[in-house]
Image (cartoon, rainbow, N blue to C red; front, top):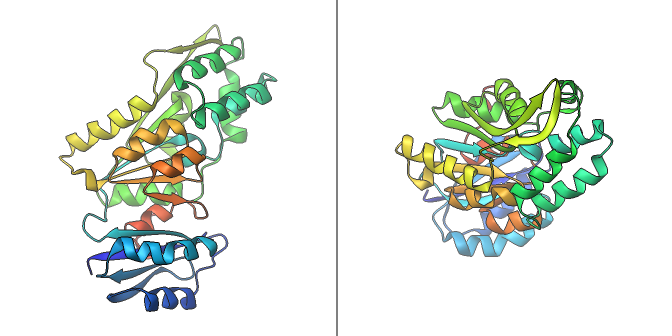
Length: 294
């Protein structure tokens, strides 16, 4: 069992059938075992054949079935470090866009955020530009936005709590703001969280971000930092994100995952999650529903 193909569907709308799994197994070379990780949602097909050949043969067909999938070696399948983006990855919104709505500027700032996430503009400069537009906004809008609009992505809690329970380090690194990263880390269990600090004076945002800026460099540096601290190999690391500022850390990770991503991020990733939720990262490591810490 040198290699494994993991098939994953959206748990909210499962489409993985025994027939699909059996058909894939029948068309692969040197299949040694088939194992269900979650009925109707995720399954492993273990094989000794060539990974590249198997992916070229089955990949296009699997894409058409609305499934997420990964061909990978069995060795180092379980990861010891996860570094994750927050906005539109661990949570379902872009915090700065929602804050902008309280200032009546959502359309303008959302367009700037989209350009940054697609890699069309410099992230640090556009972050400063967006925050500058929020000058004068009452700081109470941060708490209001958190309570009314911030929602975790399905699967976030079992992902982080299960990896923690299995001895992994979990790190949240966001180009967003520490007001939210701290709260999201508390909700999910991330052991470390990093983000940008909004300057507040007299109960209002000043329109400035305090240095240093958390950007793509910070994200890859964090991955390398905790990889070195843990004495880990590259293969034991996992990174996930959706925007252009996540590309460096996705490329640096042993398994770089793009989550419902912008087009540029797809090309940089080892695996793209288009349909499933965040529990896909657990199935990719071979964990079954019975292993999840909920």
